[in-house]
Amino acid sequence: MIGPAAALPDVLRRIVGAGHVLTVEGGDDRALEAYLLDWRRRWRGRALAVVRPGSTAEVAAVVRACAAAGTALVPQGGNTGLVGGGVPDASGTQVLLSLQRLNRVRALDAANLTITAEAGCVLHHVQQAAADAGLLFPLSLAAEGSCTLGGNLATNAGGTQVLRFGNARELCLGLEVVTAEGEVWEGLSGLRKDNTGYDLRDLFVGSEGTLGVITAATMKLSPQPAATMTALAACDTLAACVELLKLARTRLASGLTGFEVMGRFALDLVARHFPQLPRPLPSAPWTVLLEHGDTEGVAAARTRFEALLGAAIEAGHVADAVVAESLAQSRSLWHLRESIPLAQSEEGLNIKHDISLPVSAIPAFVERTDALLLARFPGARLVNFGHLGDGNLHYNLQCPEGDDARRFLEQHEHEVNRIVFDALVPFGGSFSAEHGIGALKRDELAARKSPVALALMRRVKAALDPAGILNPGRVL
Ligand code: FAD
Ligand code: ZN
Image (cartoon, rainbow, N blue to C red; front, side, top):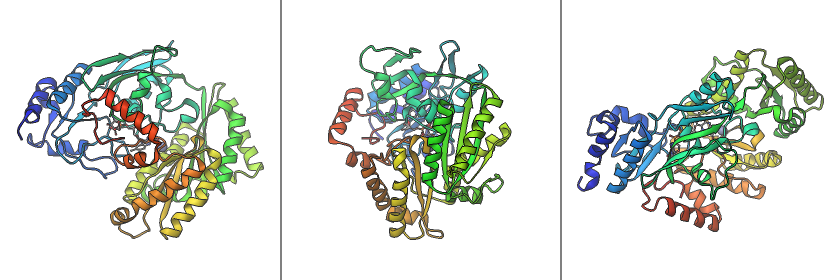
């Protein structure tokens, strides 16, 4: 290797300390694996170096050094992203910038209901810091034990509480960002109202590491609910699930904090790979997980929740239901839901779709698209689950039992995607709801987004990252 990039690892070592720069030449192959292979095991990148700065100033110095060397940077948090956006490409010329050492909670303001935390804080730790202060940080997703706040913001993550509290963007009040030129934008603010020009914060949220490196954020907190109730309900059809949602919204109003749907085959996979997990209502074609947060206390919450389920059974929307009697039971119901992605990856490579639709259109979309897919790929196994309350389905496809999954994907993934994404169009749906574009859906974005929107996005990218060094080839 010749030129400025060859000397870059040594420059980076001087910035962050030799122990925080990993390279193949340095014999770090094994440690590199965790950074270079994505969670789905679909993308394996190579890197000139993995660099782990410990402060915002070090991030800025790393970005300046890479910019001077003309070397591209790929920011990474917990490496749980599902669209191949957080691992470098195969060229071995990019630097992977891990934010994991920026893991301090900087401040919690209970009266202002805000928490300021660094980008590498694991989501669960942010939730815990809020809980320790008697407050709630509502962002919640199955990867919360390893995904980071910076990654959540960079992907505008959704999760299971969006129905009540919104996605990462709606929870974010302020950001600290290192720009592509290595300057620090100090935009940490706990203000609910701040109309002072263009909204820079919202440009960086959801930009998947292509516009700037998020180093810290100020996020909204909420009071803890006095009581939380969880139930599973068995429904015969998706249309019945939607009726249940309508009823739950009417009866619980903002007390409806979660409404997840799980198709039978999704739960069959959980039973196959995690047989130790109890599975109530095993024969239900569709299982809904409902969560109710109440400010008035346990007795009032239980009365309201049981009345809702009773009314839903009476109306014929629900065939049977179980209400968790303890925190442990509630956790085990959530555990079932959260185990679906893991069970799917145990089952083998699969084709994931993270789609959104108007809730009212979901039953017709699924009926039509299931039929199209099964006619074209007899025996294909449809794994359908998701955040029905947000109109967001994880509408995934596993190859026919016994087939070679890798070969099936190589041959058919493109066509499967086309069938699903085309089917969304008449219903006004989106081919990317909460996981982002990354590398996986970049071509889809180029093909399906309006030319005007694409041109505006390219201009934003060129303005904020003129040298094109931040996560090139991702999103656009
Ligand atoms: P990474 O995977 O490290 O990175 C993701 C993207 O963000 C990359 O493009 C990366 O370059 C960029 N990035 C990361 N950190 C920064 C930073 N500090 N500054 C700038 N760019 C950065 N998502 C949902 O929305 N809802 C769910 O319910 C959900 N469930 C999931 C369940 C499982 C089991 C798994 C594995 C993933 C799930 N996800 C879900 C995917 C989701 O995108 C991630 O879990 C999470 O938001 C990404 O955080 P991360 O720290 O792992 O980011
Ligand atoms: Zn999800």
